Image 1: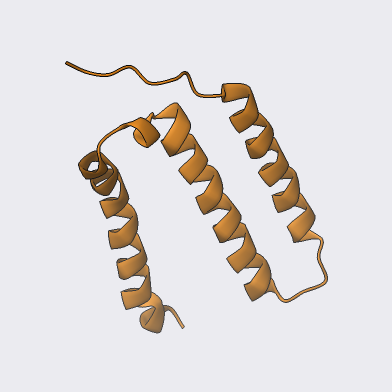
Image 2: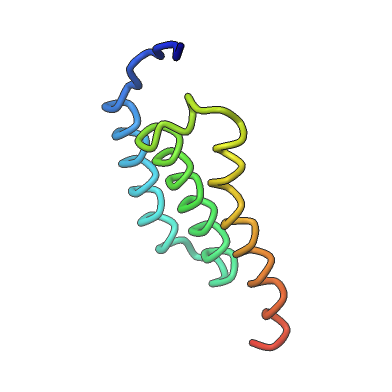
Length: 89
C-alpha cells in the first residue's frame, strides 16, 4: 500500500526558480573572467534542474533507487566531458 505525501509548494518552487533565473542574468554582467562566469552559470543551471526534478518530477518523494537512475545520465555526461576536454583544447 502506497503512502500519500504532502502536496509540494509549487508556488515556492516557482519563486526559487525565478530568483535563480534573475541571478543567472546578473552573473552575466559581473566583471569577472568568462571561465568563472561559465562555472557559475552551470552551477545555477544544475540547481534549477535539481529543483525541477525534485518537485515537478516528484523525485523527492520516490525511493532512492529511482533518484539514482535519474542521476546516472548526469554522472556519465560529466565523465564524458572530462574525458574529451583534453581533445578540445
